[in-house]
Structures are given as structure tokens and as C-alpha cells.
Amino acid sequence: MKWSRRLAAITLAIGVTGGLTSGFSPAEDKGVNPKIQEMMGQVSEVRIKAILEKMESFGTRNTMSNADDPVHGVGAARTWILNEMTGYSPKLQVRFEKFRVKKQGQRIFKDVDLYNVVAILPGKKMPETVVVVSAHYDSLNLGTRPAAAPAGPGTETAGGAVGAGAPGNTTANMTLADFEKNAELPAPGVCDDASGTAAVMELARVMSQYEFDKTVAFIVFAGEEQGLIGSSLQAVKAKKENQAIEAVLNNDIIGTDVAGNGRMGNGSVSVYSDETMDSVSQQLSRYVREIGERYLPSMKINTVFMGDRLGRGGDHTPFQWEGFAAVRVSTPNEIYANQHRATDTLANMSVPYTAKVAKVNLVAAASLALGPKPPIVLPEPRAGGGGGRRPMPMIARGGGYDAVLRWRAAGVEDDIKGYAIVMRATTSPYWEQEIYVGKVTTYTLKDVSIDDAKFGVKAIGNNGVESLVTSYAYPPRQKVEIETVQ
Ligand SMILES: [Zn+2]
Image (cartoon, rainbow, N blue to C red):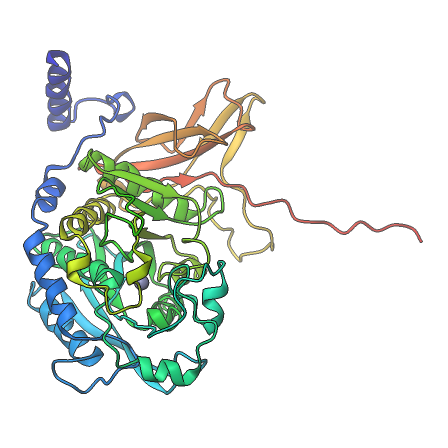
């Protein structure tokens, strides 16, 4: 204890006088940032509960429901969300993103105007870089249908939508007329996904009282239940406009901590990414775990290296399709019997659990938005482009038997205190070793083979907040056609 306090004092002294070469700085101590901790403390269960009550009061938020009633249905809901977020802070730029969707499939049984609600908190130093926190505010009641026949994964999507419900929540035999009729049924959708919406709104309120280096976008989508419509259109638009979205934290079903079979646990949350080893989405899920468990040591973050729950969908996926790092935050303890039914109510969920998951989101989003951009490990593109092959990351066998890593700064270099190299066995889910190497852009790991381990590098800001890890991921070898003599 005494020693570490002395070390901290020395570190502080060095920081103040700037007297040492950065390469000799003491290793990073995985500290918590007091500002982020302060923000986390402001996430309010009372406010989250009030949002959930209000969301429930609209009766339904089905995207296909009557949008003209001032207090009932999807129109009333989105207007309330917009006005509420507008009131949080003059710094928040809140707007509807409207898309005119054509009649298609069964679930979109008529042309419909779809509105995502977007609240932008502009960044101070890197406003072009965006961290997204999202959820869907629409809800669904699938009506009376065969009870919980154990439908296999995929069966439920037979209705033409990937956003479809839980196991047994089959839409296989439903007709267009059924969906039309169901659009006005009570669909409180408190867990799915007013819980995610409440987390996004509460983060918008708390975080808009502060300033961040990067831009934070708080988005609640519509049309999730019709097949990820709102998020797909938003993601395509972002890609088309070349938006630099660094991360998407999508929250869907974060409201229950006791599953339908009694399995319980309010101390864990699942983060789904994808199955591609060292993808940007997997890196993001590792980041959420590391930062989440640092600020909330009582919380276990399950990184699940799958796209989603089997055969089921969420709004993070369209962002992955466009090449962005995106994850789904979700409870491991769902109640299938209530999903897409009139029983998905406030009485059947847990506000304290939702607040905990909101806090996980807050510390991850705030760290991303206050931290540096992740380093780049690909060489500068050659002038005039050229070559169809994907560039190889800057990792090499120095002298044959050393690992030589190089990288480039991606953001404001003055704000970077230094870099840390991370390593792990290829079979390990998490980075096992971390070496702080100071403010350099190359580092040699003596006698370390690059052939049987994974490597990555991250930047650490002067404020102690770290970036996402950039992994030295090799593109797979391309198949070559071999010509033979006939
Ligand atoms: Zn949902």
C-alpha cells in the first residue's frame, strides 16, 4: 500500500514536471478516471423507471401502428422521446431521421414513414469520430399464436424478419393480415426494448452535462421488429456519408435478471460481437469487458463471440455489415414468455438491473469518447493507390526471431501519453500480457515469435484513458488457381 502510494506520488510529480523521457515512464496502472466515475454515479434508477413508465403508457410503439394519436402509439412515443432529450441540454442536437419505407414482406404491410431519434453531443477535439449508444424504441405484439412449440433457430425468422422473437415465438404461420391486425394490439415492450431506450436516454442526459473529445451519438431506432429497418437505413447512410463511427454499443433487452426458468443473476451482462477472430467488433467487446469490470467490479461482462443469440437479430448487425465495430448488450436471463406479448411490462422486469447495464454502457462510451483513437497498424496507402491486395499489417520478424511491431498515430498526437502492446495466445479470448512502451511508434519484442501469438497495440491518452486495441490481423491467404498441362 505504502509503496504504491509513493509510486503514485512519483508518477504525479513526473506528470507535472514532464521531466522524463516518455519511454521511461512507469507502466500504466489501469486507473479509473475520476470524471467518468462521477458520471457513472449520476445514472439514476428513478429516472430510468420514469422513462419506462412513460414508454409503457403509449400502449404500443409498433412502427406500423397509428402515428397520429397524441398520447397513444408510435407517433406519440417518438415525439415524447425527441422532446425529452431536447430538454436534457442545449449541447445536445436532437432530431428525427426520417426514412420513407416501401411496403414489403408481411411485417411492412403498407408504405410507412419511419423515424429514428438521434441526439448528437459534438466532440471537442475529434468531432468527426463518433461513438454510438443505441437501442430500439419500437415494440411488437405478435398476437395469439401457437404456444412455445420448440421452434428451431431460424424458424422464427420465417416471417421475413430477422428481428423476430424468442424461441417458440414463431411467426412461421402468420399472414400479412395477422400482422396488420396485430399492429394495434397492446405492445408495452418494456424489456424489449424500452429498457435499452431508457439506458440510451439516461446516458444522453448524464453525458450531455460533460464534454468529450469525440462525438457521442445517442440513437433510438424504429422498425427493429420489422427486420432491423431503422438501424439498417441509418447504418447505410453513415457508410455513404463516410462517417467515422468508432463503436456502436447497441442495447436490446437489458431489463430482466431472472430468466423464465428461474435462472438468475443481476451481476452479469452479455456482449455479443461476431465470430471472426480479432474482428473490430470482438475488440470492442473486449474493451467493454475491461472497462466495464474496472469501473463496476461487481459486474461480470460475458463477451460472447457470436453475432447474436442463435437465429435472432439486433440493430448492431447492420452496422457490422457496413464495416463498423458494433456489439449487442443484452441480458443473459430473458423471459421468452413475455417477449412480443402484452405481458412485457414494467411489473415483469428489474429497474435496478437496467440501471446497472446503463452504467456499463456509460463507462465504456465515456472512455471511448475521452480516449485517443486506436493506432493504425497498416502502412500509409501508396500514392495513386495500386494493387488489389489488402495491405499487410506492420508486424515483422526482426532478425528472424524477434517480433517487430510498428504503428501510426490516428488522432491528435499531443493528446497521447504513450502506447501499450498487448499479446495473447491464439486460443485465449482475452489479452494476456500488456507492455507499456511509451511514446514510440515501433517496438521490438526480443525472442518473441510472431507465428504463434496474437498482437495488438493501443494508445493511452494524457488523461489516462485508453483507446480500443488495434489487432495485427492478417488477411486470409487467397486461393490461387493452378494451371495444369492438359
Ligand atoms: Zn428487441
